[in-house]
Length: 183
Image (cartoon, rainbow, N blue to C red):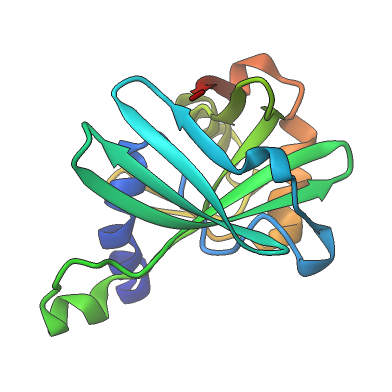
């Protein structure tokens, strides 16, 4: 219970982005791939997503909102069967955080299916209503915790991959986001 509460504190910002938080990544090291075409900037409305190469297996994503506030993520791409998955993990904040509060925050993973990288980045994220309904009807479909109406996936990497693969072709399970490549 205590661990779940601490995870929920960190989960709030991920829910704001419309993503379902995960304790474990959606990839194993053997599945990691690097796509040079992802390096660059994309514009989702009034913000910018800038992907830079970190090393030969990862990226740094800087998300800027309204030209001001920036958030940084460690990003990995993984090939799981026919699917290309993007795992996002928050980098340590540049902001000063109270030492006690900092010990309570737990960064969580989130992910998206990558449909295309060029010419625009097209991502699909799980539809929260679909997942909540599915888990209400079949709680064993994917290991999870619900605390104060917040859902956190606690399943292992393999279990998450199996779930995503099973529902990848179900249109109602996903929401699409198109990020136009900046020239």
